[in-house]
Length: 67
Image (cartoon, rainbow, N blue to C red; front, side, top):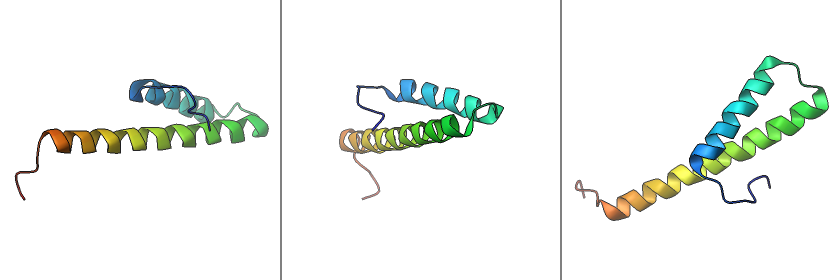
C-alpha cells in the first residue's frame, strides 16, 4: 500500500490534489495513468479513514447531547 509512512491528513490531501492535477492535464501515458489513479485511490481511502477516526475521537470528547 502507498501509505506506509506516517502521513497527516493535510499531507495526503495535498498529494491527492497534485495527483488530480496531473491526471486532469491528460499528458500522462497509459502506464503512468493507472499508477497515478491507484495512488489517488489509496490517498482517498487514507483521508476517509482519517476523517472517521477524528470524528470518533471528537464524539468521545464531546458526547452527543441528543441521546
